[in-house]
View 1 (tube, rainbow, N blue to C red):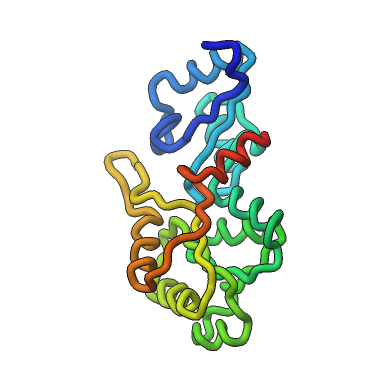
View 2: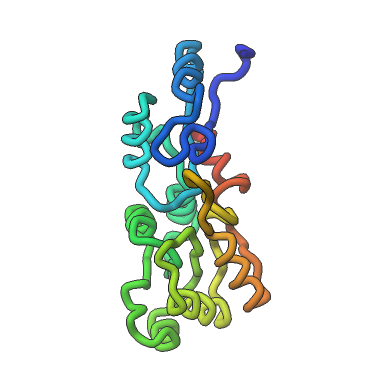
Length: 208
């Protein structure tokens, strides 16, 4: 490998591992690169787990990693918004770990108020932006709340836009379908995408 290359960024799902098994050659290849002095980072569009969980999974597969070696779409979105627009009220179509990640960056999440009527929440608390993510707990209530917020002028962000997530034996629906539904219903387009293939995740990775 060229000596001018100082580091490499590897996708995780379907590249380094699939499910709980490393893909052939991944462990040995990454070890060989590190022996050559290359800096190795790992990225995932999945906003489902904190970075330390991914690091532990890699370690269990025989790949040394710390949370700082892992960049997820959830981390990128939280990091970027904390640096640029930290006072936005966010409604998140996502799972609890994503909410925890965003709160960890000091961001304001209004999901806890959403047991009330969505329009009452929007009028009372304000929703500055909707964040759409891979969400295995997606419900009509979540979709309707996001729709109503976007219709009243909230901005439209997403962690990732993958159509499907690779799994052992097949794939499962990802955030792309939810994004497409909201775009179709509202006539709006996502204005900020945190994960691949956006430049944002690359910029954050290069800072590492």
